[in-house]
Length: 191
Image (cartoon, rainbow, N blue to C red; front, side, top):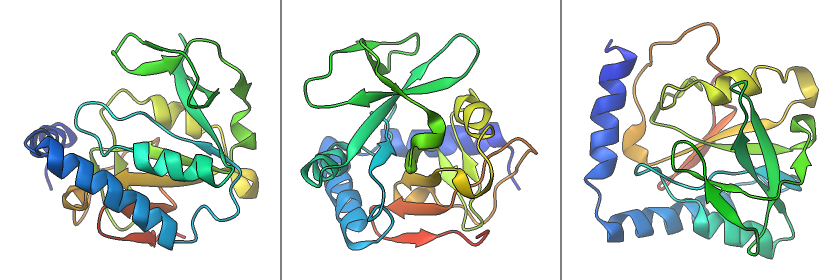
């Protein structure tokens, strides 16, 4: 099994080779996969992300969520390596954070426990629900605070080629409940 840095480097490079047209088509296909799945049917408050570094784009999915009266929340990085989620609409003012990722300027934060689902970016995933992120640990640190039946559903969003047979894991790595790619959606094997 490859190490996390090697997997990250290889798959981030693969994402970067996609043309703008391929990225846009995959984003639309991802949205369609969400629409035909029942993963967000009962969710009203949904954590999302804005794509960067070649991540699969949620823009068509976000528009579909808004059209279906769902409220979306973007992560904001706090000093303690915690993510807070702030309400996001088409009129929300954004500014780049320390990594150049856009965040809401005026944050009407939602308690993490009140989010019904959180859509997570990733670099790699496997069918067991393991997720490999960029390596900063922000999602792992934040989402490990949620547990039990009250926690949000964690849904990984990716290109289909980011799937790996298995991934190296650490004890603090959060597990995904479901994966949605540009070609399919499914619940992970750990449920």
